[in-house]
Image (tube, helix red, strand yellow):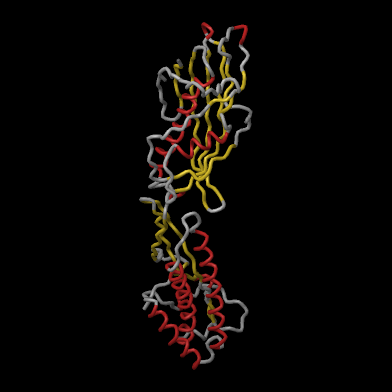
Length: 371
């Protein structure tokens, strides 16, 4: 009979009842003679809702044996332990973990790393064997060719047993393996709704950013056109009459709710007053319109960025990557468009070309829902 106490996250205590082993006549496989312990299959009372086991990997530093046990007739003078492993070695552990629960491949694929699994005995009072067992596991989420760490598990058990075959310790070891899976099932069920690593999809929403009160930076708004008072920058040596430096940017806020990563993107077009300048004698409505159209083109680039992101199905594990790629691409397109605008209008000197660009820009802003 083995009396044992388990220690692990959640703290379990139980007594294992006597185990009777019957050998049928003609079927003799004395596992204790060849130092094997037969790990019995057991269907655990777990129906996973969030995961399935895709792989089990042996990462133990010491793979010589699972158990170091005292002989059946141990005394103080015979305190030498012998190594005992599972029949099938690590394969028996892997089989038990994979077969003890149902495997629904529509759920999160989990890789289990066995870090340590060992029991060691010493002679106790009255010649009884005092056993100490430890199980350490790591659970990781499979993401393509990579894995992401989720949680570690450490389970401990202390037991006392009388003289008997090595197979007597099998229920203790089997219970430890089962408890590790029960622990992970409880953990992932609690974390699934709010842990970004376990989110199932990404939902994007968009909003404009408009700082109030206004400082040096002007954020684009149809109700806030440029004025000559916005041109605060020093006038450099330049052959041009005026200049603005519009830009586009985004910021994000993310939260996980009900297994969905909800990302809000604030996409804006802006320009700093301190970088806007105009020479004396050119501050008329025509020149101001030319500079305003530069700002309009930045807003168009920002809206194109939003449209691009809306069409994409973003991956949960790296939704920020595609968003940043789209932003860089939109910024590059903005620069190209701004240069084309200046080239074709000769920086506003070609009134006919300027009129055509005015029409083009107004039409596109309207199509994008800006005007």
